Length: 265
Image (cartoon, rainbow, N blue to C red; front, side):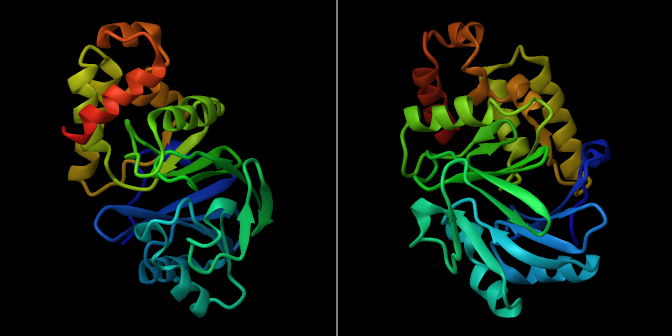
């Protein structure tokens, strides 16, 4: 069963997003324009839950958007392509050889019109070198680059690259942009955030809400860019005051220290 969002108000948009829980803690997403039966799928880690969610809602998938090549985000691509003839698979041009079934490669700021929606790709390397975020209307799908109150590990990039992706690309989106990430990590991320930013009321409030939502089986997505600027320590490194509490003077070294601390938290 698809977990409901914890904030119905945040779904008031012409772009309708349905989280589809997959694997242990992944999210795939169904995305469609209000009133349309044509949909996009984001990060199809497995096919069966996605096909079931499409059928339950009477939606027809026209394309899969893959944020990066890791198997827990693309494992369902080929099965979906076999089940849905004509399905497009869209990803980064960097990952032409790494995303199964890729039919359309997008460059940084490249766009495509799919299922009646305008899709824009943002290159956000760091977690992987080919990582992209997909912007659709007032919504961004960040994969494993930006999580609620956290960010992904740097498997292929470095701190300078990842901090640029977070601070200069994603944090520059409009504050009201809804953020849908690739995993349900909010409770663990908020606990880490409190360990480094314990005087921040926004972090404490986030943890309380996230724990309550998860206890009820409710997804903690979406967040917003404005929310993340308030409670995500990996975005707060842009704040000189927060950096000062860490004893650092620049955002890249601050990010690197936080990511190292989170890796062992």
